[in-house]
Amino acid sequence: MATNTRTNELSFGEPEQFASSFSSLSKGLKGSRILQIAGQVRELIAAGETVYNLTVGDFDPSMFPIPAGYKDRIKAALDDGQTTYPPADGMPELRAAVAEYASRVWNVPFQPVNAIIGGGARPMIFATYKALINPGEKVVYPVPSWNNHYYTTIADANVAQLETVPENGFMPTLDDLAPHMKDARLLVLNTPSNPTGTVIDPEMLRAITQGIVDENLRRAEKDQPRLFLLMDMVYHALVFGDHRHVHPLELVPAAAPWVISLDAVSKGFCGTGVRVGWGLAAPAVIAKLKPLISHMGAWAPRAEQVALAGFLRDREAVESFQDHLVAGVGERLDTLYKGFADMKADGYPVECIAPEGAVFLSLRLNWIGKNMDGKAMESNEDIRTLLLEKSGMAVVPFQAFGRAAEDGWFRMSVGAVTSDNIRGMFPKVRALMDGMR
Ligand SMILES: Cc1ncc(COP(=O)(O)O)c(C=O)c1O
Image 1 (cartoon, rainbow, N blue to C red):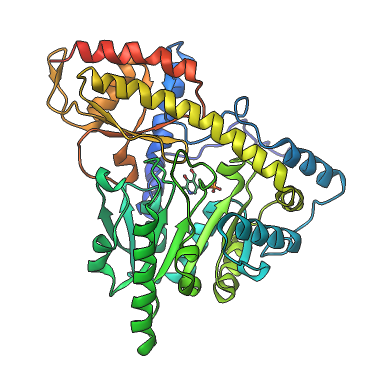
Image 2 (image 1 turned 30 degrees about the vertical axis):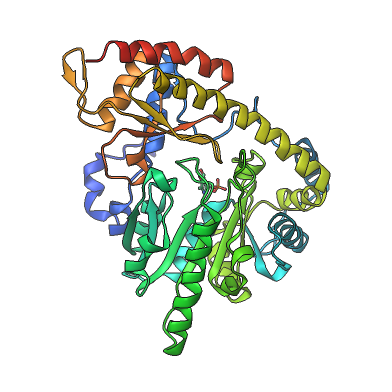
């Protein structure tokens, strides 16, 4: 009689037995700190605690759904059988629509050959790093900034982090870049910025972009590898007050060969789970991004591409959606900013940068060295934990974005809260500071 060896459970053994088996890349690549904090917040909510969740870099779809005109077109495209592979560089009608949209928004004459479509902005970032950077080559980026520390690990790059200051809106200047100008291969900028919610001053951007053009003229003489600018603009639709988002090529058209700009439906159309993003670059660069996107299978779903092509061309619907989005996010950011500005005016040790862009605000809790219940606060993590446990306010420290200084700076995000939620939080934060010595 044959013996049945089937069991109901497979045993995978202890995790330690795998330790020597993973690549050095896998060993070096850390999980997201933001997701760890989000997990902790979810546990508190599940345990019935009131949490003011300002950690989420995403939108609550009940408050911020994707545009109806996009959703309806996705459904129609699925019904129409748009369910097979798209071309590796994207559906031609979407490449054309993206070029037209970008030209309209930034007054830069992009053509369809400048566009490539992928499954969100991330595959574009990944592909850019892998297309340009050999192991050991230098990549420069400001800190705090989003996820560059992961992508530089993936590319095995030599990293130069530019420490930024609040006086410059946590953005780098040409002077900050100068020590790396001669040997860097890639500068990565993101504006409006995750995590700081600030927008780069156009004159600072002009100087940097012109600096890249000048450096590449020097390199051209010896045909040395050029310096590129990866410009992450996924939050461009979200700017407030007098702030303006400009494309570097609007400022310095001569930089066209060296600028790769990124955009996606994730933020400007609240579709983080929809997974459509695009890059705009020189055709020779697009040709190198294409096989990387293709071999990863990181293209965007065909139906969502076809639908986006139709939606982007509906200029009125796009603009009215984005006006509505700016109003909703702006109202929350204003409420949040005002609450902390009032605390500062009342003498509390807090500082907040007024809304400029994206869905974030930079908040400084000047609490290092202060005592609570006999315990001195020594690090941003001490502050974060106290704030969460005692007042239910959940934020992400700038350390999660590469900043070293333990000086009390945090990211606050408003994509999943209402202004009423925010207003309910302020008395608790004030009460917490009243108990501090
Ligand atoms: C600055 C920035 N770039 C890119 C992304 C990722 O975009 P996507 O979801 O389209 O991959 C994010 C997401 O949080 C972001 O904050």
